[in-house]
Image (spheres, rainbow, N blue to C red):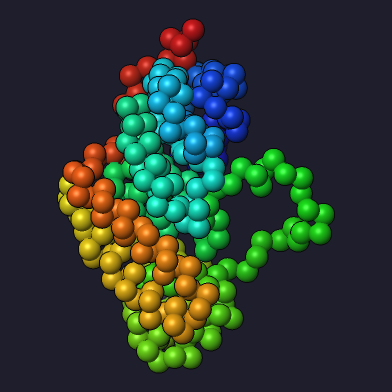
Length: 307
Ligand SMILES: [Zn+2]
């Protein structure tokens, strides 16, 4: 690690079944030893991130949530990466989304930045609503985390290769296969409504989106995060709701008329809007610690203090 130019390491962890899972204590101890060994080798500036992988339902239980918060507060990690199962764009119905946001607000009592893993497009909403201070994302793929993919035996007929990249429709936060996107962009109205207008991102608008979907996705998602990050924290939720989500929901109605496979996207955006609007009306969202990928001000950096 010292020679590899790495700035951080993910602590090895288990998929926990509950807040009382015995492996949680073991994971915290390993993270502590990892910190100790890094420090012993003079790598005091390298961060340790703790992936908290567990069923989403666990965080709805106040007693289990408290156990997790107490354990993580005593562990010298610089950020907690949330791998909640199942959660992600396609599994974030109104109830799941509200619970994720409210649970993450509670988890912030850890006093370290939270990063939402595999959240997909809904991750931008999580940032805007102060649930997490950073998001991790696959590139056009991997929009949700589902632990069943780890616990189920692998299908021997499944291909070992990753599927081809999908085309990101940034105006509505949705993905289509290249073939479906080509069909959609036969409509001039859809080119005007959904095509990339940033010449530095995609030359030729939709041509660039189809030819290099990975580049288009990375640049657009980065711009989405920057847009939220550029707004004062107390205004992020409102700006996201009115300037990002509301226009996207409207546009998705038109897009779904041309490409019926986008009907699920339309319904999802409308459901998010209802849920997030209710959260905005209930009061201001907390401001999370920003996940900058650096050492945070941990109060208990010495692993031996855990014993
Ligand atoms: Zn583009």
